[in-house]
Length: 434
Image (cartoon, one colour):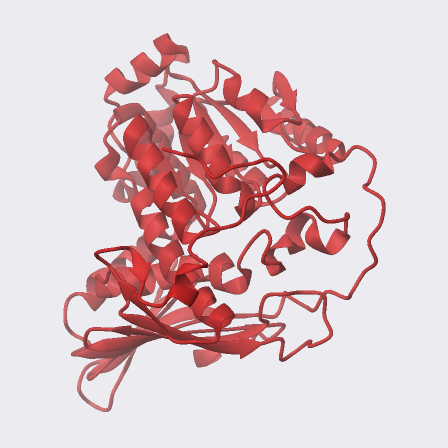
């Protein structure tokens, strides 16, 4: 392990820029066997495995370990890796701590539910691993702060899974916004209307399925009987584990609202919403929410709705920067400018031209080799920033009050809100100390 990490730190491999995608294959083909990057994945069911597949597009990456608390998922993904690379990973674990102890692993992918991110990322940093951590970075503001401290203390490379930061058309949209051509921007509208998110019906508790280590799945979350609604994908709609659409999609879209305006933290946030579409559904997080963030000189509005596709501008997600001269509308498909009267020319759709997730992984691998953290497209500081802003909206919703932020103290001015800065840890687990 020491030899490999020493090599990676000293190799100085040049980063492959977005504009050099055409030379990507020849660059990767030249990688020597000694330049391998050994990866282990924790949490194999959903986005975690999508991340691993994107890693495996790069021939110098080797998957040597998988970890999942569900035997069925673990064995299925091991077979999937074999289909991709011709052999199964050498190590299969149900306890993530065993994976992190493996000295042959250089990079840990944290693809678990949100309530596990902090413990696993911090442990990986302490073990000297570089980390690709899925979004949102943490389940609470305090966790985000701890994770930043851990990465800085141990000097590990951490890329957060906000892959839109590596997508060229998102970057070009920011360049246009900052050109000033839109005129004074007074409102940023960020939205996520997700028709693929239907209601989940109330289900009875049931015995833990065979092959599932449910205690390990719960980890620091509140101990509850097994319920399928709280397991796998739909964990997102329960406060014990996540923050609903606000943190699931908000960290992607609000991130670019902040980036386009080059803004830090809002002065205040006020959120209203509820279970308007499905009041009798099993979900806890609001299926409909509107949040107003107050910044100097402009406001940002976040809105989300589950089971509806028809959002603003005929899009199911996106961001609009509304200026005196025109409005730039941006989503994963591309960006365009809608002029205000004759104050500027319309700009037709500038389409997406590539796979942002693949670009994001390539960027991470290059930085793992070069050790030049300034080249990361989404550093842990960037992930913590937007996760904190999203949590501010959820905290306003939970308290029922407008909340205001003191950036010098990294706290709210309201004690009711400060009580929600940290996530509760249970079952013998404790918040990491860094």
